[in-house]
Image 1 (spheres, rainbow, N blue to C red):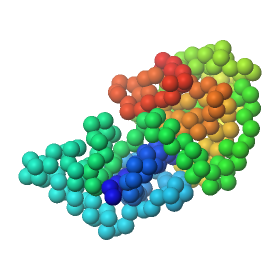
Image 2: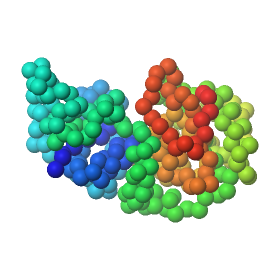
Image 3: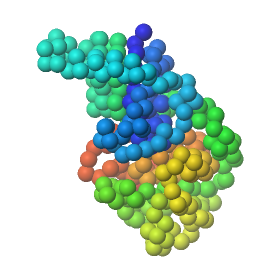
Image 4: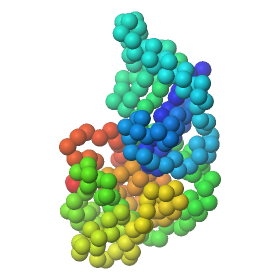
Length: 287
């Protein structure tokens, strides 16, 4: 049996991408274990501190033991040596591989032991695992109730993420939202919208959002309770204008129906290639 160790990292949206990828590996008879050390010691991995939102047991997986973490780290250190690389070509080695997002296309998932260290933001993985994700998330009552809630015709979520993206120069300009709202109003009967944002003042300063049914701007989006509450509200909408955020991507993916319209920014991130893909039925708008 192939054994795969997956580094779980990032916020809720990224976590769901990684659970979906793990499920796709599990369907190919891989034994899956998760390393969640990134949430205990994020500084060691040079990543932003986040919180693990759902217990991994909800998804049918287990944490890696300290022994297995040590074992995989030893394998990684051993096969990174120059001597062994002469005999075991990386990504083609059938004993051990360390795989990141950029490696996945040429890696055939055929090694006995593999570390997966990435986000795996590919639509084919989440689409394959949609029922799995919904079933797993529904073990939480807030999320279960959101999935069971009937969609209000024309209701549209607009997600605006700014606070952390301002530091990265990846915030979306108001022109994207103007174009997206125009497109949505042309396509959606009985169109209305609610805004979810971490920057109430910015939203309130632009006239394009004056017709919002509500501007939902929680005081905190850092705690597990706040994140769950916000995500459950987002799932209830019929249509989605998302930000360049895996959080609203996942709300749209899991909350949408065959009648839904989903609009996303293109490119996803400015100035660099972003490893992410979308449902062909989703509508891209230049940012």
